[in-house]
Length: 210
Image (cartoon, rainbow, N blue to C red; front, side, top):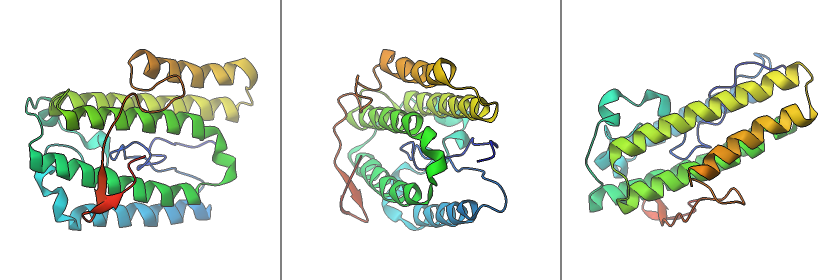
């Protein structure tokens, strides 16, 4: 696979919705068109789902990089209605993330350790917001930082593959990313969410969180 800009590589892989990533494969790659279609469908569902209304304007529902300075400065904690909206957000994000996974070609397998660690960290952040352990501003800032760090790790790893650098140099990039998340207690040693407990929904019905 041609190593190209991968900054939005799995807009749903990061919870919340960390979600904000989509792979820019070669223009003729059918994967690109399929993922673009899923991205549009996800955005449309976010817009149409009125269960998300309590948190609109408080978090960036699709792309973490659209987080505004005002969102990062918020000091409030979720109300009961907003907690239900957060559960709905994660439920629908997970649904669409699974559909995106099906479209990723086997040539993208190198992304899996990065994306899975990032997704686990994202769910930890959401669970902390939901529980009131952090406020909206802290969540938005940390989510944006996680998205940026994940983006940079993918870019570095893609460059290594393009230059045919393997072995220790390649694994060190992923390991450094995973270790940073572990030190921040965003993931556990198995790269799973750190004590994240959340019940999720999609259109008000029970749904998988992770």
